[in-house]
Image (cartoon, rainbow, N blue to C red):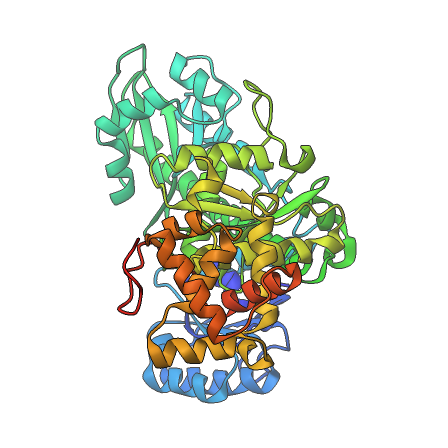
Length: 554
């Protein structure tokens, strides 16, 4: 399903901006507003071509709302008119979207239809489904013919998207760029030091760079921009000055290329949203919807673990920003189709568990991207710069219907760490990941504590009387009993924990039994008492000071 917000986010703020949101109505087509006719149908995004004034915008908005359309796109000043925005909020639909100035309606129609058709295709949502990259190679060939030089097309992250067929007069940097599909680090350093990327980000003017070290030949660089946003660039190896008319022709190619890059970005955004929707359904319901073509791609061969990401101390960073961060990290470490999503305010991932019980790869063996071992490696690397990052993982899910259980276990571990009831440092061992198998005992105790309830002392038993005695006389009987139970009835160990003399502890125990008779020889009674004490929040602290009614140590 594609919503208006999906389309706006996918095409980017350089083209569209939501002025008044209105729910998540599905969009399946684009319609042009015809004068005097109905404005769209349910599921259509209506384009207000030619509407520039307030009265026309209000009339079209009323017609669009009456038709049940999903959204209305207008240009300034109509899109920003206060009366128009108030009317859109009053009608509670359709969504009001602004088309940025100096943007062609024809280009927007082409982009929107391409994205909608792509998402509605049978394989829509399949992760990694290739887009229309062949068009980029054709444009690279056209640019090479214009300038009579080898050309590469790169995005704003210096990733090679396409290159021309002819690469005769080139240099080692160009060969490495094409083979590796990314500009080599040393070449990037050279161009960055020359200020090339600063100029690309700020201006649409062509850039010429002279020859550089290690055989780097001169280059002509044409920025690719849309709506003021830098999307990529055309790089050509040139050995002589380029005539101005050829540069103008290259700028025309760059304008067409900008539309293709926008479309590719939008389709990638839609694919990510569709796959995230499938994963949400899998984590909540235990099955990928329809089990269609996208289902196989959304989940690789299992078993899988659901992972929740966090930071300590508890971070307040927005989950969407965390998602962007971890997608960038995943790509940087080789997971090009990361299964990441935000769900109920937490960031989750689905990784493959290739080893039995999360067994680590042998030394020297590189873990496959998207596996538990891979995540261990990534966290070990990233924690060197941000030691607060961690991940918690539920037990393996061997079929999709077990994914909700693994999700719930990851949430359980995340909450235990956030509440301070699961010490993180002893478990992560520098790798930053905690498996359910690492903390099963803490989970069992926490589940029992939650089941017992905080008002467990009302059920009867000795704790109600001990609690009343402590409150009335200032005695530490509950804390003393908890320490004694935690240390297996060893007064020496329990006294060291409380930092009191063993005789003081023995005295307290005698007085405690005088106040409330206890049969501490019963294992069942000891277990019930400890669970009750834990549910009441009674955890013996280190270094308890002697009380006034304690006898002096002997």
